[in-house]
Image 1 (cartoon, rainbow, N blue to C red):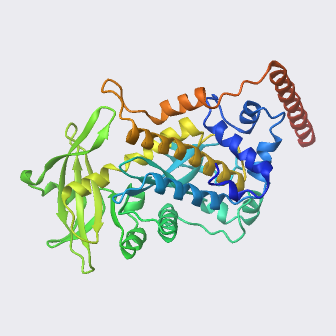
Image 2: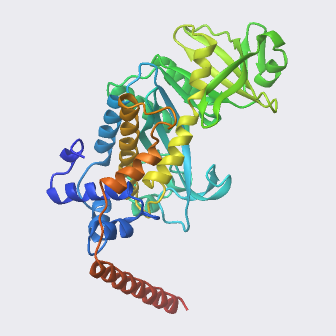
Image 3: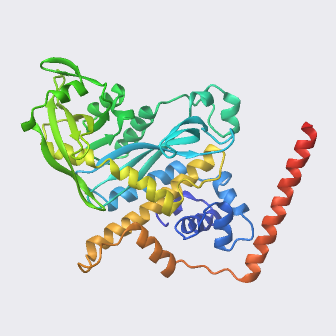
Length: 411
């Protein structure tokens, strides 16, 4: 917390943000301004809501601090930057960026808010280092709606690959380095993103659809057509990394692509050893690399999925109950900081204490449990709990009366 303390000019928000981050790391069943304020001993949630909505501090500056913290402690010369989006299902139409759109969280089209994240994945661990809210055209073409949600008037529509390119550029311009970028089909199929990465000299392994076309010495083909031409001897059984159940083995093949520009370009094909299902990747590197390196990078993409799962489960990344853009960016940035703390502690513990063979190394989940139980354990007294019960009922009564008045006026 001392690392980001300079971003808060007054002592009150500095203390409040510490309590909010501790609340995000707590074992509360549900985390929002109300529950964290009660857990922290506040008499009302006004202070927490003020911190997220009206207090003067720069969430983008704190985001830069989080990025520096992660890179410093998880530094890896072969690190992979992984881009991906996640959605949070929402009700209503006033929450910034919300509309009916596909989200992998629900697996279907829902009324949802979608954000793109950039994760830093190295040998010691992984954590998110940047975030951008996806603002659909239905919002950017409605200035009044954007203004009501706290979006700047000059905001323009940006695709998810454009947001990804923006974050990678920001990461590199800050002086950080990464050898590779990985992403799914949304990003692999975007020519502008691939070109931007090549111009910065960053290698990539980006998934593409089966209908994607590439150029070889024999001509231009769909990638699924090329896969049928791969001889049996060209397939190699390699691990894409270790998971909870051991190594994730697949069959892999690589095909060289032709391009007059400098650099090495390949089509990487992955085949599931059980089902035969195929996946395809566009690959680029400034200099030729072995197949094992491309497979390692392709297997790093699951790290961002783990961040989404753990970030939401451990640090309440998706439990923000806010409508305006400022509040959203502040909440998710502090959630990223909370998860980064767990990832760094995990990495340091693995480096210092391997532990006996009969125990698995400490996980972020176990570290959170121990941290909550041994370090942070506020126990509010009965008077405090009864006071909060009264406050909640009073607030709910005011809300109900307001809804009834609005309904009566419409009738």
